[in-house]
Image 1: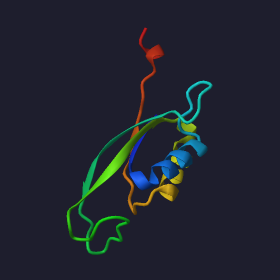
Image 2: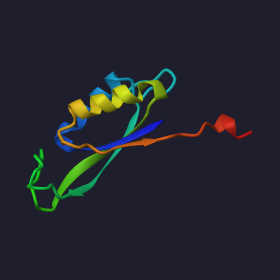
Image 3: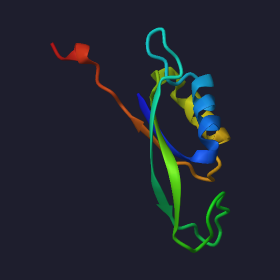
Image 4: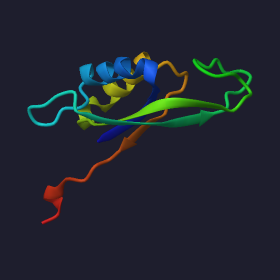
Length: 106
């Protein structure tokens, strides 16, 4: 499974460490395997929201890192829970993308 999440730069290493400690990023004899790049997140919190950054009822733009990693299926729930604990956002968007195995293509 591929897991993708975006996070503000200030919290990048908190989320990276939490993901690895929960079991994400294992490739053979390597751990902590990730790819990241930067981009701009855009969102508008409702009046009832409690945003970690930005203002309610206003369109906000924040420089963020996009983290991509791999995760064995039996660790996905633990990794998602770790992301939510370490991430500053009320509602971090976590993408779970099933991966194909090249062995399935003879």
